[in-house]
Length: 435
Image (cartoon, rainbow, N blue to C red; front, top):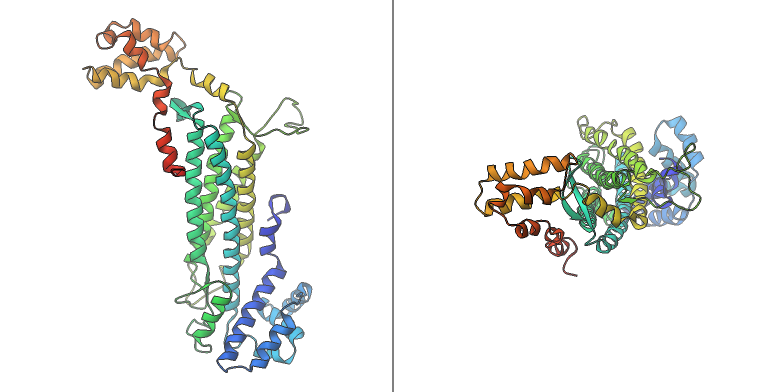
């Protein structure tokens, strides 16, 4: 997590002051529940809130205490006692450190998910606007990087829209799975604390009760969360890579916006490089790098160990902050993307009509040719055009074997570009709805 690729709202979730604020709220809500159950005095619970609710926790002081205690939660509780006074003896009764740490982490991840879901909404809005703008803009579809059949640029963007719709659904599911609370004591048995305390804290913190915990919340939940971030990052990279390919000099069907005064190269003044989408490719790798450690964190010894702790201290901030930045950058790229329909048409025409080869194949079979013979007839006329030796339609009209099945007019009919776009409306309705 470095400032260059960070946005303030997401960064603030992971700041020490935020973390200690959440720790306090967990402890204070637990004290409220304990007071209602008669375990601690109600006045003590009220004092805990009154003394520390608006406190600015001294991070340096907590770090100083931790250097001696070698325990972060004890360091915080010691500092809290300095603020609250004698009533602090009623804080953390029956609880274990993981009750605070795990519940806090899940609050942070849920808040991060809310930001990421809003980020995806920005990407979706940009994609929808540009998709309708270029709904019927012809361009070439490619498979293996090779010209295949015509599509529209709007369809390319609609494909991305559908993909990020799924990304949003996955993030919503991941948020639901991660948003649990455990206040169950040393090994999860509630031996020293009533389950009603957990229920109270969960509700107060906007979480649900973890059905069964050990000393920790099960890490398969976190694995699913970070795996989801990895999938979303891959969707970012897929669209970024498509744009990078489209910006190649030999293609130049679209390119990133190039602002006044921007420089593409320190050596070559003519350069306009796809730096933003290349950056997105790299950021996606960082987000995905969190997935394997998160999966490995699922395996802990017995009721717990802390092998997961150091991992989560890094991947929690790094993965969420990086993906937040990447999604916002992607939304901006799409919004400002420069699109060149004339170049798309030029590339579409580059192979002299070969993109209509399947239509010819089907037309021949419908007129009685076997599929094998039809394929050979189309291919033998296509290969010279591939080598730059003529025009596909003209060669077909001169082929006596083709003319046994198709007239000149019937051959010409197979080269109608609009034929390929007759179901664009249907696809758009599937992706964007009837509106």
